[in-house]
Amino acid sequence: MKKNYHLCFSGGDEILFRDQEDYRRGFNCFALALYKTGSTGLVDAIMSTHAHFVAQSEHPDELMYMFRMAYIKGFNHKYKRKGTIGEKCHFEMEVVGLHHMLAAMSYTLRNPVHHGVAPIPYAYPHSSANVIFQKEMGKHPETDLLSRSSAYRFLGKRTSLPDGYKMNKSGLILRESVLDIVQVETLYNTPRTFNYYMTRKTGEEWKQEQEKDGNQLEPMTLEVMEKGIDMHSIDRMLTFESGRADYRKISDIELCTEIDSKIIPSYGKASVYHLSDKEKYEIANTLHRTRFSPRDQLKRCLNID
Image (cartoon, rainbow, N blue to C red; front, top):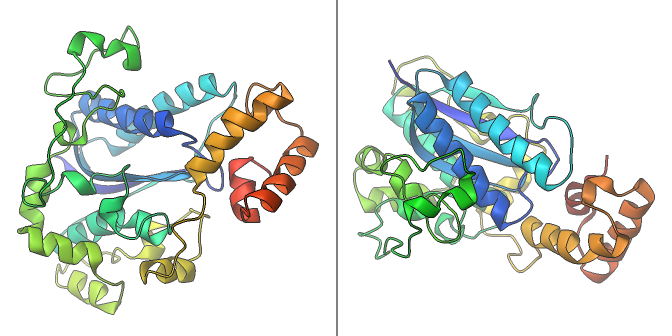
């Protein structure tokens, strides 16, 4: 019997998704792992250093193992890198009860807000926030799709697009064709309730509501959801939630793309993983001076120990 889980894959302070292609491939790997394990995906949010999922599965360990191994294999090939990522930082937590489920899904979808990369969940492209109550929110499903016979260009010759899955022409398997959006909408009940949860402030009321489930389980909170993730402190995340974030600043994906496509080629290196420590600090100092990038972001994007 399938159970509900909050699942997290984290690289600690290492960037896992450096460009748009990585974000697309990240969700594609999760979608295929869902199919292969007979699991059901509900919601997701993929950030630069980690990814959150809420899913139903009989085999959550196998689901996350297949996802991680598939993604890491492609990541290592692309960036000429060796070794694993996130072996010590991934975790899974069973979710029981309506209020625990609403909290887990809402915290997942609000993750971009908590990390200061989007003012509202709907402004972030790498999550499922925009496919829930899509019609009621005045949004339109993507219709410019890739033919099933052409999907191998993004999945590999040995992998077929599962029945029912749809892929757009950029190579992303559409979330609405993979996730059980009907079930998610049933849990939220109405578009108004969904929107309320997407904009609701973090507070003790979340914990009190989860106590109504009567399951004696730890409530889903920011501290629980962000366990093992070093990106931002809880206090800073709450500051971002209140709207006090500079959304004009360069994001991790923008900075990584600039480093990978413009700066690293000038050093004649295959990827950031082939730079010497001296070269990394030289680039970091230049970007800090010219792009005003904070030191913690430069450390992430340049993989500085």
